[in-house]
Length: 106
Length: 449
Image (tube, rainbow over all chains, first blue to last red; front, side, top):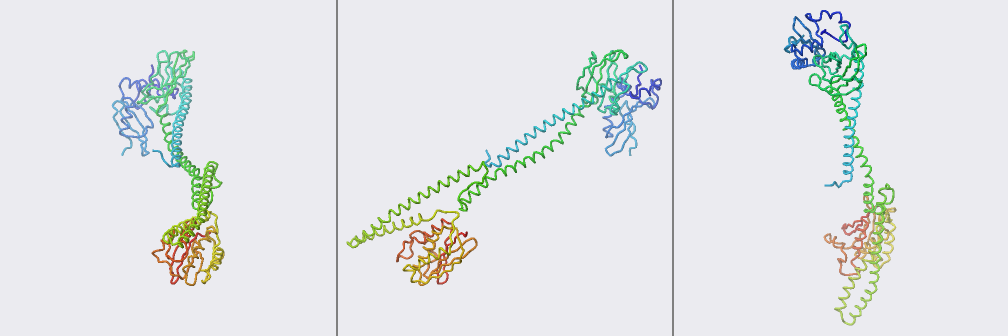
């Protein structure tokens, strides 16, 4: 069973990369089917929990959520629109929920 | 406790009704909006469902997939609140929108693929409640003819938030509206009750004599009241008239017997019964005074709002008569009566009042009497002055009482000034006294016309 259905809309375009999907490369996007499997296996935290933790530190509106595998570590990249109008990207450890980096934070 | 104000009662009733009606309107409109909202959401979700079902296909690996999911970006944004999900039997392959991310919508497994459309509320991701439509279908033979179930859902909080927003706009609007309606009710009550104030004002005019009757011209609802009051006034006038004529009849009836009694007393005196005669005389004189006064009262015209008397004409006539009396013939009469001066009084009553004042002046004058009239503000003053001894200031009130005589000698019943006082009271006039040098003056202050 192929597990890396990245995005249904781009089914045809991702066909080519399917072969390389099984062991995801560094910096590769992880799709939602994979994310569900990872949560079920207990390897990462549910997104709701991640967003709750991020919201406590960096409040704002979530614009974009991506899960990436960087050097064997699952990292959520979350783009947040802050109340002051700035758009910030926050990197969160998908495993622990700890914030790894807040981009462009003074 | 019930309010005694009709206006307040009407206003409170209107306000209670308006507020109740608008509260019901608020509830009804919110319910309608919610209904409309749900129907709109149903249509949206139905369209998504159609698209998802049409998109079910097999990928190159032979696995099921939705090849052309709905294009709404919210289906891509994790936990956005818009979701779709497909379950294909057998085996229960689950295809989900990206927005579901690591969660799955818990729905009953597809059973028969009967094409039925169902509505559900189920717990969604992140503690939300999902409102969803689900449809059971059977896939085309090309895909194996399996039963499948497609669901499309929306965060129920979105719908209730929209309803809340609607209500939060609606309520202030309805409050303003109810304020305007209550204001309108207030204006209506004011205008509606105005005829009552009008009838009160007119009744006041009747009481003060500016007007004889309420008459017509009131709204249909108030006119019967005015008519009833007018009929009551008519009845009262008839009663007064009857009482007056009875009193006059009585006084007339007494006059001759009293005269006879007086001459009887005269005879008694001649027979030497002076003591009894004097007593009878005193009593008869008192009785005569009373009948005289009663007659003068009965003669007095009943108060009429439209009465009018030309002071110059009346006073000249009185003076002409006075000059011919035994007392008046010996005096010098002067008069100062501008033409065209009228007062609100019956001419006969005015004549009697000026006559009594003149008689009084003539009786006490040494050599001259003057009658003058002049205007003073809204009043007309008739002043009768003589060069007699006058009345001391401390006794001015006393002389207006019936039967008071300051001079024990001479003719007169002591009723003259009391009758003037009666007339003055009946016509809203006043009596004033004045000592001016060698002259004593009594003024009759009448309302001008």
